[in-house]
Amino acid sequence: MNNHSIQPPETDVIWYLYMLRTADNRLYTGITTSIERRFKQHQTGKGAKALRGAGLLTLVYQQKVGGRSEALKLEYRIKQLSKQQKERLVSNQAIPIDCWNGLINNS
Image (cartoon, rainbow, N blue to C red):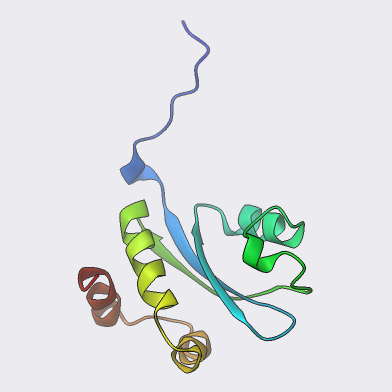
């Protein structure tokens, strides 16, 4: 028996889209398989360079997406939105499934 860990197939891993608000009110969008782990990385300066030195971070949005491919496509589309559109998304706290499919399939 070998000691190598067995990684689950990509399709078994659940990905999440999340948005963080910085101290100066910017919104950062990212994807991860563990929001708690990734948030801690951002808070300790080990996450995205864009958030280093950004002060207090607040998790303002999270949504289960599914596979990595879908998460990457959705992240790209969300990053193309205006600040006003992102704020609306944060306020509504959900992407209607018909819009979500449109965001992914139109990329």
